[in-house]
Amino acid sequence: MKKSKKVIVTCAVTGSIHTPTMSPYLPITPDQIAQEAIDAAEAGAAVVHLHARDPKTGKPSPDPKLFMEFLPRIKQASDVVVNISTGGAPGFTMEDRLAAPVAARPEVTSLNMGSINFGVFDLATKYSDWKHDWERPFLESSRRGLQQNTFEQIDRFISELHDAHGTKFEYECYDVGHLYTLAYLAKAGRIKPPFLIQCIFGVLGGIGADLDHLVHMRNTADRLFGDDYLLSCFAIGRPQMQFLAASASMGGHVRVGLEDNLYIGKGELCKSNAEQVWKIKRILSELGMELASPDEAREMLSLKGGSNVGF
Image (cartoon, rainbow, N blue to C red; front, side, top):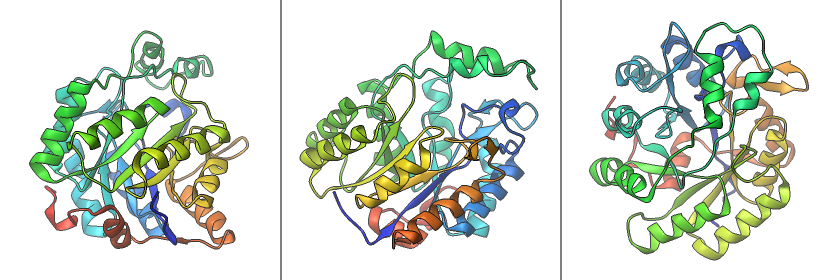
């Protein structure tokens, strides 16, 4: 693993799983998403990871026009690295998942390394009054669906984003087998280092949020990739900050944001994405660590630069 004296903080601003009923602070409209991304960057995030939502209902949307309502504003106000999701949301087709990334040609997109059950149906039992009719059925659908990322689909993402536009990837790994898929793609020459490996803990269907698993994922990646990768991680919900501190202590990087955790403390809703960036910045400062700037992150990840995007 490539170790750095500085930590790359990614902020996942809104995601596609949390719904408007769960928090009044979840950014929904293009204006809200833009401002939250800009504020997170000003707080210290080097990368913002972005989804779009229907501004009237808050439902996840693949519409490139919605992305283009906030991407240029973020670029005008900040030099933060923009990372667009290719995971999309439950029910999205491949064309949906590719539409905005291909149109925007960002420096980075996410790329999930395998198909998994992605169970968020328990969230549907925690609320009785819903702001919108779509929310509960949307969550319950994860009981019968899966997050599909076949080898053919992964290859298509690489072809249409990396090969065509020079976009690099945040390789999302929800289990140990995903590291071996990534190693296969590297050996086959489909992808080149450095690899930003984002280990994800606590999703029902993926690896659990136990710190022993973080060590196991790090050790496995060390064997497979040597010094050709950067480790980052996040955990869903309550274990979030514990995992981030552990990742940074190992020489890795971190991801915060309302996509992953709606709370800033026990029972206390987080009021902004910047609030989570400030919190991890304080923790890292106490550990004697500094945050990487966007340009330092670009150098560490060998990115094409903000002048070579489509927005």
